[in-house]
Image (cartoon, rainbow, N blue to C red):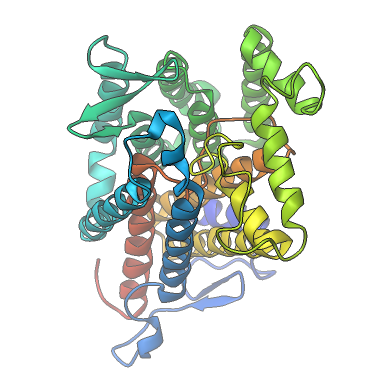
Length: 423
């Protein structure tokens, strides 16, 4: 194992599992309680292929999301705004997005991680061009005052979702290239910070502060896991938190969202910025322990806006109760931990880029799910972030599935190496 990879492995496992008391420079190594020693042709069938448990959890979340999108949107045609829609309109489109996403995921799984590493800078440039294109009048589509979509025939596509994936791949490749100078701020951190700042400016111009938060957290997480000096990491984190604070303080409608979050049921906010949050809390409160039953939600009947997208968890809480919400949280926690485990395994096999990509996907899905759940439960101010794998939204579903397919590819290549093969 190379010195940089060994140093990175010790850093990662210090946070997520720990190494044995004595460091070793060659495999076998033990990370998080699993033995990753080279395999022979007699490798048991259980380690061949990819992580089937992870696949089934993903499929379960997708299936549950499909049912809940239908449940949350079935009454929307009663609204004059959606009077021309059939009751199955959003269900049909969600199924279409899932099919397209599965096809894209199958194609992404066929791409070796070495190729992802080579095209990382070009993927980042392509994402920047898409973010610029969406801001061009006549090209970008404006919905509810935000210019976030590109029209592709009958569907809209969000470049911000591509930007999350592109920054993830680029940051992992960047840290591998800068591994030797990772302790030097101006040579290791500043260029990556500038790249994220450019993406942030373009996202804030839409505006889409939620996507910028996710992009910033992905980049910061990969920088930290890549071995950036802790002092530099916390300095950058402080700068980012301060920047977000200034953005909120300088924007009246963002300030109003924060005040509404602090007291959503007040007379001033209940019919304004606190309307969604107050009705989300009412929905979750109605669910109590076991819920009112699938399809029995009242809040989805035109009381709770965006019930099939940003506030899908509120409908889940109303129809499945505390039990359903806890099961959902456990599934996301398990999935995030499993993806982190795959990333640690890759780093143990001296595949730093692959490991950082997998861990970046865990940060992305885990953080976005955390923010969405926090918003629905009233623990965080309202943000326009969907629940990964479950909420209605073609761009998000597509890129989530592509990112998870890349994780499956990392796991597949890990197992191939462990049984003595070559990637």
